[in-house]
Amino acid sequence: MEGTGAAETAEFARLLSELKARSGLSYGTLAKRLHTSTSTLHRYCNGTALPNEYVSAERFARVCRATPDELVELHRSWILADAARSRRTDRTPEPTPDAPGPTEAPAPPAPPVPFTDGEPVTATAADPAPPAPPRRRRGALIASTVAVVLLTTAVIVARPALRGDDDGATDRQTTAATPATTAAPAPPETPLPVSPTPAAPVTPTTTPTATPTTDAPAPLTVGVRPYVYDDPCSQHFLVDSTPAHVGPPAPERDAPRWAAAYGAVSSGEQEIALTVQGTGADTVVLEALHVRVTAKGAPLAWNDYSMGVGCGGVVDTKSFDIDLDRGSPVITVKGGQRDFPYKVSKSDPEVFYVTAHTKAHDVRWDLTLDWSSGTRRGTTHIDNRGTPFRTSADVNRPGYDYPPGTTEWTRRTDG
Image (cartoon, rainbow, N blue to C red):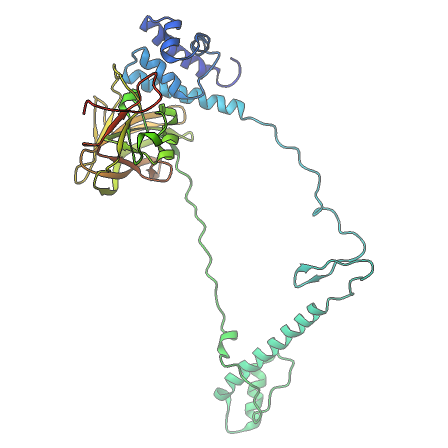
């Protein structure tokens, strides 16, 4: 492969080749277990192709018995290679400026198009536009009249305060106070009509303006996989429908769409994966990860559907754990994973696996990630595409499996 991204793709291919060599499995055996072709696996391992989705590489690695650390390293390598591929394929030439549109062309010499209060009026040859729009003259006249009335009103309001014993002195004071008016001052004995609220038009008002936001975007991105399968059997969903109205189980890559289609809720536990990567040259320190319960209620009285049957050989990749049944749930470290803080950058992302579980409640929850970069500090909110994650207990709920080779759900009898 040539151009930008060759090094990242080659590194990803190297990791796959090492896992394949260590497993002792042939390409034919791997292809059968992964339900794909041997030529596709050859291209992945020699670097001539990159999986469009990480889940394909993850299944390859799990069949080859990759360790949790190797899975994390493989995921990081795929992210870098995929980003390099995007930069390479998304480059497009600058668009050629379009020819000037009709709004840029000079106005035709004739006939002129008059405007009435700012709106165009179409003129035709049989009915040419008048030389001057009457409504504009009328609007100017109205504006001048209003100005005179306002100034005169201001004089009348001020006159009682200026009135003295000598009428001539009073008139001189009033005239001096209004040098800008061109209309003759109203005589004292015949005052002009005054508006019921004369002070409103002459009271200056200030319209508040919004203060522009100067906050820059967070120097990191967080990718969320809301349903992680350690193996197909690890994921169960609660659905408020009978088996006849529920489609076949979904693989991990289709789980979000499947759950949305049936209004499904994770049953018993939910594992999510967070891919955190910097966006600029500066290093970002991930200081802490917190869980927040937004709602808690009684468990859902729905049916339990398993996404797989007869699984085994699970590779434990759980790094952080949340007991949603606690009064104030916290995130705890699992499986030898070290606790926060971590550091990420554009070239060095991190992948965190978080598993939440409950045996007694229906819980809606989300996460917050505290970070710092140089003099900046902030908190990034993490949820399931704008809605909280949701996990409900599955105790004593009817369970259904979808055995391989069948076309319908079967009631589970093992409790």
